Length: 229
Length: 143
Image 1 (cartoon, each protein chain N blue to C red):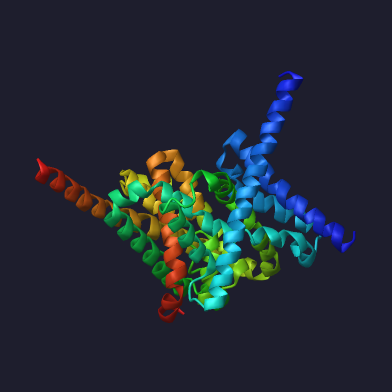
Image 2: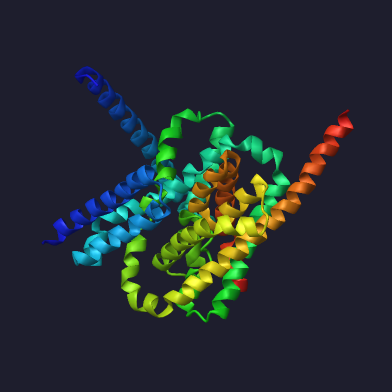
């Protein structure tokens, strides 16, 4: 097949894999069918099976990545909509965001040393806890590789989603604010989706925390990089 | 469903889709302008965050009604995962690296997630009790 037809096929595979997984999940609801897990697996399998070269894969799909910028801006709407909650709990939310951001950064930094991960991976995983559009923006400040960052951010979401239930039981975390902030700070979008299973307040708090930790990470990255890289 | 009912549904679906697309395009335009602004003034803040701040200000000043961008924003945020699938797919070029360090990375991710989930929840629990106390004291003072 020619480069152009492979490129078109890649776009079709990507859209079908993503929207197909999304539909399947809304019908079945099994955790393994969550689009964050199933969609990349399906698409990677198709790309490998069809032996599509990466330049062909990127030809048209890179336009999708450009939408991460506008998505960052779109976060203004949920912030505006939840301004009442922000005004009610400014101290709790601020401390939660700061704790989540610093714990994410410092634990990543320490664990990279502990697990003896090479610098290429080590620099890419520092932003793992924040939402992708922010992570992709911030990772360059730490010398990270955007592709590795995207993968680690995705896996962090999956791990957080799977671990939060038993951890909250073990740690006796019962308040909606604590659950929401913890999920938003540790597992970003996947955490916010999971938080919806606990309740509406958890979901709102998780989304807000995710957005604020993302912004704080992007703004602080050049400074954090001085200490951690 | 009768044929005319089907037509109506199709029409309203198309209308909603074009509205969503138009609103998303408006947000893209804002992203492009914000990016230009950052380049022109050599700002140390990325375009996305500048755009977010600008849009938040426009909403707060009621210059832009929430409804005017809601559908577009909901699509951009609801399908966020789709937009970063291409970089995730390109990790296949790091296959050897992932084979070598995959298990360690998984250990890293689990340990990191446990730390952030429990640590943040603990801090928020303490902060929440303190802030709720403040609210109660304020309410009590008014009585």
